[in-house]
Image (cartoon, rainbow, N blue to C red; front, side, top):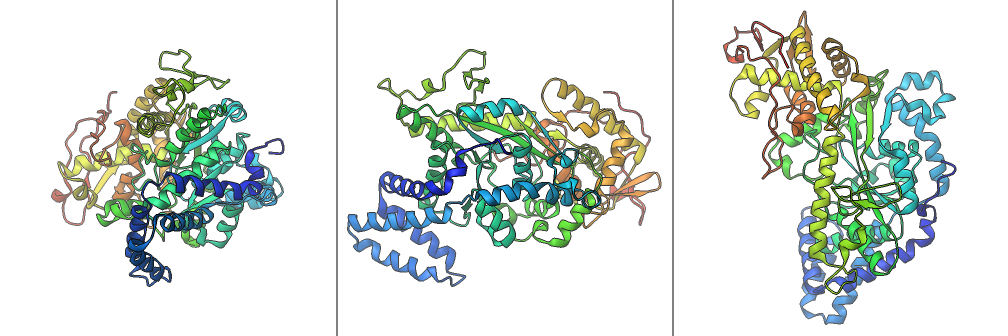
Length: 568
């Protein structure tokens, strides 16, 4: 870390000028201040009316005055609110806190992922390499390091847990990359300890409760200005944690668009400031908030709830339980960086030169030339570029998903459950808790078949297997998954009963199998609206299955009768 330098180290000295530039741009780019303020006043009054918040009177007063304001008064009021929001968003960076945080990252994460081992070797726990067996970092790290010296890096990882920011920060540190600014939900700043570190390590606040255009414009402009000035950035383009456990297939591209805008603005000014996007996947053997997230996904009203205020990550007891559960589970988390892309979805070489799909040199600057033959801003054109970039990021997520034993075992078990229940919708299948048993040996055979398929896909660069799975047979992987599941979640996921397993928590089986849904390796009930579900590749033997409803009273139905080894 000592040799790493980055613009963020001078952030505090530049913060006032950053805010000033944000306010200036927002004020100049807002074509209709009356419309912008009317929308803000209406939506804020509506949001605050049930809580009786002190700001409610201010917004109602503004709404009553807007029709009588002159254009100059409207502009002044727009600047007032833009400045208020910009300062609320703006982060802070303290070198002393950064040095301290860098030193305590290892023992804190060590205590989280393996508390007893950390206590046994407390002096050694301050060495970041002590975590290398538990948090694995993969991908073209040297390539990304070289690009960080040439231009601005925008990290765009998947998002599963509130632990992601901390874990990904560790990955950046271990990769020898410079620190990045990042947006964090304002609800996370309610924890005083977490808030202290985030506030002093470059995190800027994102208030997802504010839905009006003025606030969104301030947020996007702030991100754009930072990237233009060379601040490496991190944001989760999924927008929020994956409720289903699946890999993101549709992204919220507002902040991604700020990277393209920053590149275009720099190019228009004649400044060479390339912007590189680095997709990455964050993969867990277990997810801390899995139960809350999958319930939120399954509840109809949950599909419209953007922020979960209370989940496992806010309860100390659950975090402690999660810590103990991962004791001794090497490779419990894998962060995998993908190949870097330019703003237009092209791969870039070590010198930052873009190459198209045929491998030909494709200078990024030529993509932003306007009708007059000069670089120019073009919102419609750049929106299309952003959409195409989003597709390339989603492709990278799919290729660099790292499969864990819990995903494989859950996929095979859930498929057996579906066959036992018969043709039924998802919610009917999920209601069959404790109703279906599965011979453990047969589950192991299914796992062998699926792992063989995964190995073939990995050889083609379509997915990645966790190092902890390599060289293991199905029975060993089933044992690994059972050991991971046992004792952490509120309910058992798979309950051993002699030589059989009872499929207990079908919600969590569904959650963990969803990690393979986009690849056609698990039942796909989570495809985004308007997207065809991935085709499930046949892998299990077609044998008779007995529905739970036909089982004798008090005895779970067998998921399979007359096992036979599946051929690939």
